[in-house]
Image 1 (cartoon, rainbow, N blue to C red):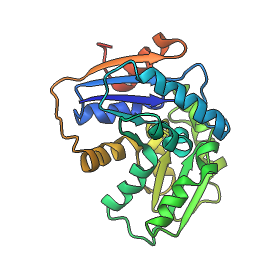
Image 2 (cartoon, rainbow, N blue to C red):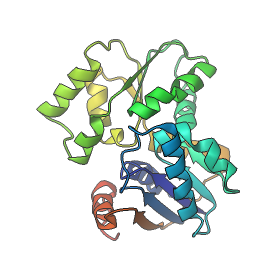
Image 3 (tube, rainbow, N blue to C red):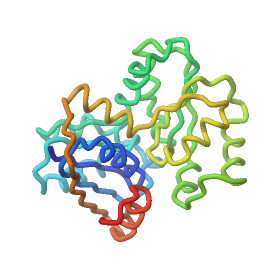
Image 4 (cartoon, rainbow, N blue to C red):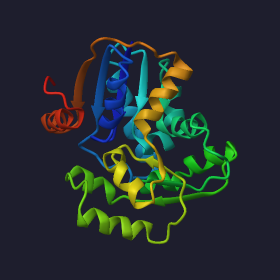
Length: 249
């Protein structure tokens, strides 16, 4: 199977990492819209327009599925993307909610959703969680985590201060949904700060979602990966080597 993975920038590489670990695809085409990142501060219509332009890029490849790694795009543009292609398009929000069910998280659990401004403002996580019977939901935008991760500030005083800034009034959390693909890189630190709360990671969640809904049990021995970016593709490839721990990119 061949998959396209779309993200507003580099964050979707954490999703690619999970796809590689489970060997779901023989060929992955990754496109990061690095010229126009971040999407998390943009309005709905702009996110939709950029997403449809990315879809045109993917039409150059013979793909079986398109995975939207960006939470902001998953929140605002999924319906429009699906209406403009015959290829299945899968986002990370519903897969993240499904992961809660797969882990048998009790309905009365205290759930914290963190993400970009656009993702939190969309209320999509809240909508799908409530639809599944989860009631105790807190949602907060944590946009500062994105530049910290991109600057490789993955621990230390600055990160701790940012945690205190966002989480100072947050208590007794059972589960944290990481509503941005940058956040898995500080997943353990977030969990520790919130008294070892469980975390839901978009990459791991999408893998389980693909297995359950699309019978993606490929277990291909090798995966060919192509990386494309709307700006500075060499930088994207260098980050991919680091995050994916692959030198042959």
